[in-house]
Length: 257
Image 1 (tube, rainbow, N blue to C red):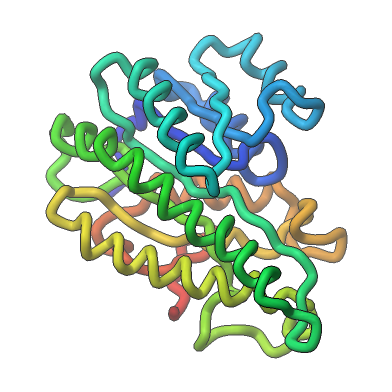
Image 2 (image 1 turned 135 degrees about the vertical axis):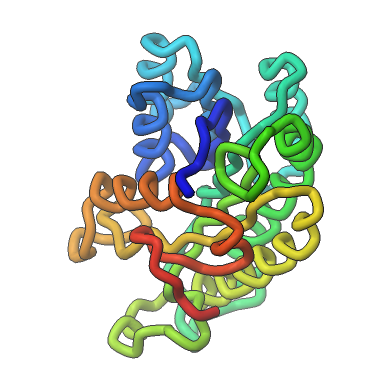
């Protein structure tokens, strides 16, 4: 069953790549959300110029400073979002911010691994924790009987490279061991969230966006940002309790953990 109208959405890591394109797509919808929260580390910096340009044209776009690994920053962003929502809840949280530094089994250090885990796992955990009251409020206020992104949902941007069963051997040459491990952990976080928030009516799903031509991907990647996000947007509209607690592709196909 298609999702109902999404009144509010927050996307982390919104100043470039998939995050920025998601923000653009939500703003361009015929019936856009009442508020789109776009977060990034430095809203006044040069890398956020495109976001600021969008905000000047779309009054429903709110740019929030948010460093996902800084608990104080996440708390402050949650308070700002709560004020902007004016008593309403948050329908959709997309944990998109992430890093993918080069890292091999031979070169990996403890700091390398912990830094990547901090951004790719701890960050999404902290963001979901702080925005949970707003997600619960949206779920409680919704008239939807089942789960969907128009009610309340946490979407964690994952990858097939984090799937233990499905990790493609042909891609193992890509030296991103810490990234793979952190995304496998993010998949477990998604599963735990799905069990922990089931009774609250909050949909929890992980999405593999494909191998995309972004700063994190490469020019040799299979998909353009536009192609990936086009699929993601369609998939978001189709998600229901059937996809609760699982990993799916940008096309909506199920991937094994």
